[in-house]
Amino acid sequence: MRLRITLILIGVSLFPKTFAQYFDGGILAGITASQMDGDMLGGYHKPGFTAGIWVGRELNPTWSYRAELKYIQKGAATNRSTDQYAVYRKTLHYIELPVIVQYKFSSNLYAEGGLSVAYLAYASLFVDSQRYNATDSMKKIECNALLGLTYQINKNLSMNFRFSYSIFPVSHLPGNLTIWNTYAQYNNVISLSVYYKIN
Image 1 (cartoon, rainbow, N blue to C red):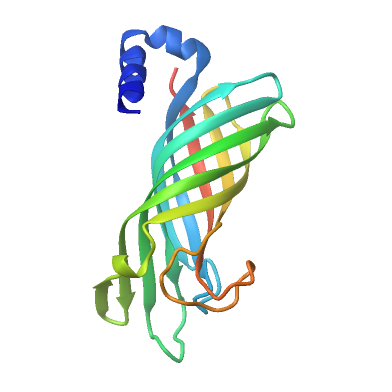
Image 2: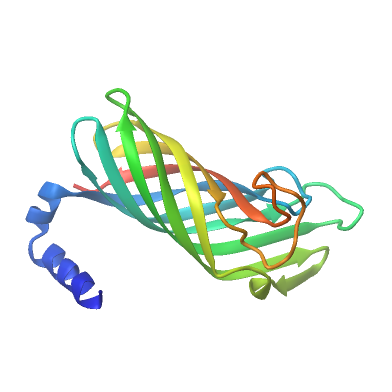
């Protein structure tokens, strides 16, 4: 596996024009709004951001695919006092690898669906006036289902709206009943990102 990755990197470095004939690539950045289903704190009240790189290829005039490597913030928060907390904010820092298939509706509108796997680098919890390390309460690996829309602004710039939901529980802690009919906790994230293609 390491040898294959090394050979790909060498090929990209030595033959960038040949690589560019088959693949597009660039950078991405955006904002996120998150909640954790099952934690009894409803609403997309946890803001965050995401940034990374992407590479993609057009299969035919209608279908294409894309892979990304990015940092993304997820988590949960409340914007009001509850019976338990005056302030509650959980921030989850993930390194995520989404793989997306896109369907072209028109010259500038794409629908997308795919899967991603993410690694939890760190989790912090801020309750009232205290900050805690919450990494041990979370599972290190997360798998997600993805749905979204992309609008092509021009040749190099596009805007993406995406919904992401955990396939398996992301926390070691129990939670309320969720849409998967389990008493667990799941990441529920919407994001708005800008993608820039590097020629």
